[in-house]
Image (cartoon, rainbow, N blue to C red):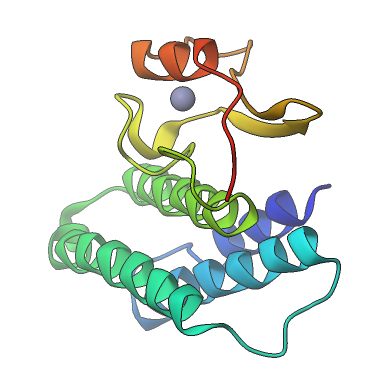
Length: 158
Ligand SMILES: [Zn+2]
């Protein structure tokens, strides 16, 4: 399993029901994704984050917790399946945080919510000789935005 898949799986297991644990799991997952991505990029696990990395992470977590808090306010009326579906979305958003720290400077990232598929995005990024390629998930129906992003590959990370 990739580092991203591993931490997504762990996060999902911690998001079984709404509450402080789920809220904390969201923040923890984005933090872990940032560290894992920097380790992939640089080859070493960072001891801490730069100011820019910290600010990016803070913004991502704040955005996700805003969604979470709205969800938690009405979660009492939601079925277990609906809660599970929501947890999937939060875990999907972790992908964008991971790729944002792995390949900084791209126009957008899978799971960032800027594509029509939102955080359900099944796409991937792949680093090749000519740059970063946006890879569609052939087992899914890919949205127009992701198809355009794939067609626009490669991208240059900063
Ligand atoms: Zn997509």
